[in-house]
Amino acid sequence: MSEVSQNKMGVKPMFPLLMGMSLPAMFSMMIQALYNVVDSIFVARYSPDALQAVSLAYPLQMIMISFAVGTAVGVNSLIARRLGAKNYQDANTAATTGLVLAVINWLVFLAIGLTVSRPFISLFTSDGEVIGDGTGYLTVVLCVSFGAMISCMGEKILQSTGNMIIPMLTQILGAVINIIFDPLLIFGVGFFPRLGVLGAAIATVFGQICSMTFILIILFVKKHEVKITFKGFRMQKIVLKNIYSVSFPAIIMQCIGSVMVSGINAIISIADIAAEYGAAYINAFGIYFKLQSFVFMPVFGLSQGVSPIIGYNFGARNKKRMYEAFRMGVIIAGIIMAAGTVLFQLAPGWLLSLFESADNAAANALLAEVGEPLLRIISVSFIMAAVGIMFSTLFQAVGKGFYSMTMSVLRQLGVLLPVAFVLSKINMVAMWYAFPIAEIVCLGIGIIFFLALRKKTFSKL
Image (cartoon, rainbow, N blue to C red; front, side, top):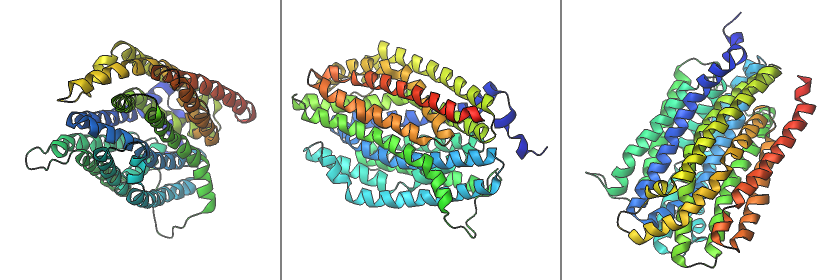
């Protein structure tokens, strides 16, 4: 039997297969989480206003990442299914189409970065310094986002074939470069200029460009199970339909997270609290999103390993292995989230102290006052979120991205924001209980969708 027909995703024992495919992605995602946190730590030490600017810019930056990752997830799912069905020509076409779509996405965000950055930041603050810093940061990360778009697509193309090592190295390269250049450009170390928030943005896009360069060399120089060629290439409606049947819900699902963050920031902005408390709550919520990435990123890395296994075995009509991968993913994700919950419950003060300003004791005390209950309350939802993420992974892997999108829409827009708004009228601490409430609802919806899919689709495999 040929090497191709013996793809490890169809024959290798599940636990070593899952660990072999997930651990590189989990490690690389942890590195990504590290550089996100380090980025904010350096910015926070520069000044509390700089941290507020980056926190306010984060939702629009998330939308850019949502398009990069969401489009790539659709390409990943299609390639994995086509490889499972031994349809190699369609897999090649999907990979080539993915790179073209990555360039198109960059052009869209180039236009957005040039026109929307300042109006967006101005929605949440009237502070001229914060607006200036946030505008500069957003303009750079959006206009120079081609590195993020193309490197993300390259990673997902290779992951769909079972290659998890190169994507890991790609992310590590970008993260390490970002971490190295952050302090140099933010604080002006040596001959580097002191650029503050703008320096953080430049370090970010420089790391992304290095990642892109590395993975493009790998894609076009080395041999892989899929081949990318632009000779005679043209867009095909059926390929775009198959990609975006998964990509569109994935994009919407991740963009909804950005809407949620902006919504929470808006609720804080209009709340009847002193201005210094409003800034502290925005900073604390922004810090939470950076900190929770240490817990969620490994689970997302696990998801990257689980998804192609499920997609491949769904395409190969191997229901037993598909279920086995899903069950194992739920167990491992639950363990990771349980560890994160313990950390957030026992050491919220220490976590927040990482982001203290170098010379503003009053701001540091205020951050601890509002941040500690925030971290403890929201972390109650982590274990439920682990199961929800695995449900979304399953739905996307088998081409049912609409189910994932529906779960996300109902959780973050249908439940979380309305409940947060109502609870904020009681007090700001009560508002954070909207997160576990929304997670309970989302988990129930995921179970309903899974049972329906098992009855209508999986039973026929």
